[in-house]
Length: 175
Image 1 (cartoon, rainbow, N blue to C red):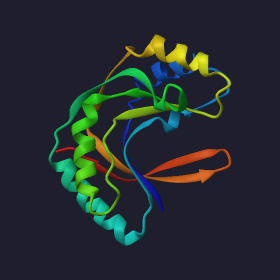
Image 2 (image 1 turned 180 degrees about the vertical axis):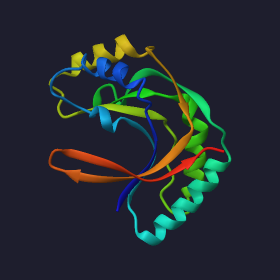
Image 3 (image 1 turned 45 degrees about the vertical axis):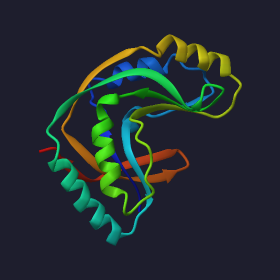
Image 4 (image 1 turned 90 degrees about the vertical axis):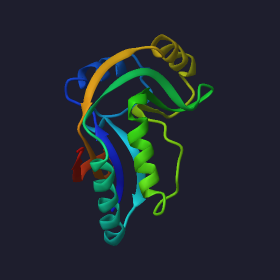
């Protein structure tokens, strides 16, 4: 099963994100509103045996945190402004939680540097590079709002021709 660890975007903030997405050039692939989330860790294909260990480790991480507010702010890109593949919004308040997830899963998966973000679009070509740069410059200090983080989720990703479908596998409530 293809899996990742995530924090869902709250419904209250979804319309603000959609409004922001509408400012992007037509040839970028927008993340569907129902798929907007913060990925804490992409796991890839995971066996049932490994999934049980992941669940145990995520339960332990969730028990170390109490619910908290996270502020979504500032647009950015990966990997660089001159070669954009992903357009995102930041959420530095998720750094400690993402770091804890990374550390807990490090024995099972490749460790990565935490960079809490909400992907809002993927870029297919450099046709509208200047439009994307303008969008980032206009929105690098944007304030979207705050949301309450009260759980982390283990999700599965089903790839289809119409795009990915995400389903919750398990939810781990923060202590």
